[in-house]
Image 1 (cartoon, helix red, strand yellow):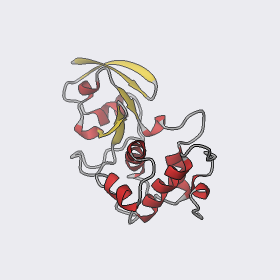
Image 2: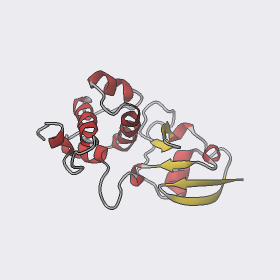
Image 3: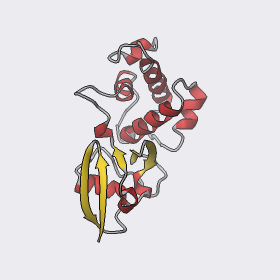
Image 4: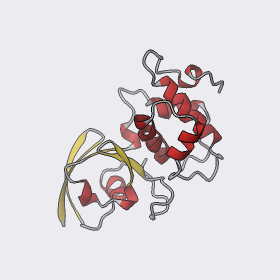
Length: 170
């Protein structure tokens, strides 16, 4: 067993873990962060994407011991003070989900993308989310949601209306 100290969604944890335990299983089984889903276990689909020290990672490709001393944000940790993150809100308002399985990872990747590029065009959004697969939506509404969230996150735009702020009619 190995000891890991990690902050997840603002709460610090100290746990003993098997050295080979994947981060996705640590989050789900030990911490109850079931919003981080297990998709493929091969890092191909991106459903398990979380933020590690501010950057998106596929948690099925990271060992829990590798996050020792780090900070992880899951889909559950994006909302603040009962308010959804603008990307979460835009995904809902732009109908960017269908079955919802890829949605947590897609949102986490979109948040990272917008951190690097606060005003991406369609091509940049598609390239920014290319490591996250969706089997249902055809991506059009996902791209729309990311661009809508980008507009909503600009200074001076009311946080509660991302789709409206982007000129998108739900």
